[in-house]
Amino acid sequence: MVTEFQKGYRIPIASGGQAEVLQILGRGGQGTVYSVRYNDCEYALKWYHPDAISAPEEFMKNLCKNVTDGPPGKAFLWPRFLTEKTGGSFGYLMDLRPTDFCEFTALLNKKDRHGNRVELPGLAMSANCALNIVNNFGALHRQGKSYQDLNDGNFFINCQNGEVLIADNDNVAPDRQNLGIGGKPGYMAPEIVRGEAKPDTLTDLHSLAVVLFKLFMRHDP
Image 1 (cartoon, rainbow, N blue to C red):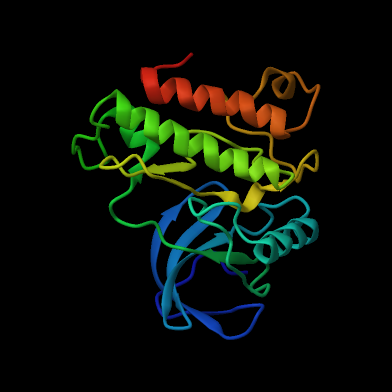
Image 2: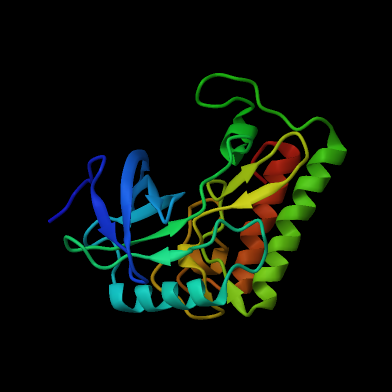
């Protein structure tokens, strides 16, 4: 069973061809992210840990539909291609994050992981950033889908113009259809925490309100 891919490893893509692993970009509880080359372009590959997904067939079916539907807006680092199942698991390709976008958590902490200062220059730029976030989630909801896991780890911000990129779109599903994700503590709606509801567009709005409060106030609501 594959646990980690080495540079040069080739992963079959469901639509044809193979993606070549270039390097590891990061690791998380659900999987590992690599940079890969596919059809002469570079992408990010999210590869799930074996057994990380409770209902893999349903999850892959939803991912496939999202690939077909396409992103609701240009800010979404949307699933582009699915892999074949390999070594007991699977993954998908998405666009790489441009280098001029920083993690939202770095903005909240006022510095990145290298200690460099990170800030939005003025209230107007923060407002522009907030509008970009809200408009893109509005577009997602108008497609009849919910994000279900909205938190401070999902965003990348361009501090020069307030543009936003939204990552981790693999949990996006039709509204009121939940694939097992609950959300991140501190961002989950109270009814989810109490076990009274599953994530949907309304609970997305609660999480969005927390994100916007932190964007403007740099503190928990």
